[in-house]
Length: 399
Image (cartoon, rainbow, N blue to C red; front, side, top):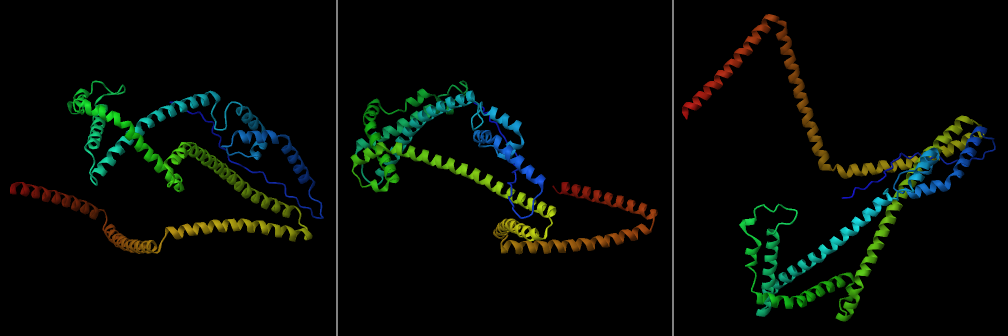
């Protein structure tokens, strides 16, 4: 068993706000310009390294902003990319995994070969059982399939009785049988030899029928073609199916990559909206000018409206989910349950008040009444115990 060592990188992305270029007639703050120019220059220094790191770790949720803010971490990932592939596996481990997969594929092909032959033989026997109930078959054919069925049953029983190398050799056999006893149930040697001689031809005919059915399912327009043409097209069917499988896997991988890219772009888009709103708010606080007030207000309203549209869409989806979840019948049932619980609560509150009044009336009588109450409780318990004992004695006497 090979254990995969994968490098899992999970980061919380913080997207840098893009520089919003505003060119009013009024001069902006000098410090804001200096910070923007410094940030732009820092971005140009490690763009190629950032792209290499992002391409080396496509499964990690990181952005260029994370790499820009953490240059040492970016260098660490660049060094790590020289020792692992895009899935996080080291080169020796990947080689070992490929060898294990090749061995598994070889064993799987061997098993599928045996299993397909066994299934084909069982299907031949089932088809024969169905045909003999509808038409009269020749005796030789009936003898052939009866011999084949008996051989398969005996082989299955011997396989169940013969312990493998992984089982306990001393464990008791099923029903006390051994493989030699099952071999005695085999048909006669003559029938077996005759069955072996005709089996390849019958099996080839059955497999050809299955292949033609598969070909007709894959391309229905080829169903009325000649047998020679079907055989020719059947020889290319495996390559075509393998080609289409690879194409489907490629499309699936492309779809997965597009999904990841879409998620990153969506997160980037929402973060950019928040950064733009914060930038506009800071500009409004720093530059309270009559000419610029209206422009900044309109831009802020536009961005807030955009965010509100996204929020309204989310709320709409939530309302649709609630409408699908809570039907009219469920709401009516909830209302009845609420009414029943409220009525029970009112009854309990009334009972509580009455009990509290009785308790208050008893507390007025003082400690002597408390001693009498305890004595009363003790006598009640003793009476109940005696009544239970009397019932038990009466039940035993009646028996």
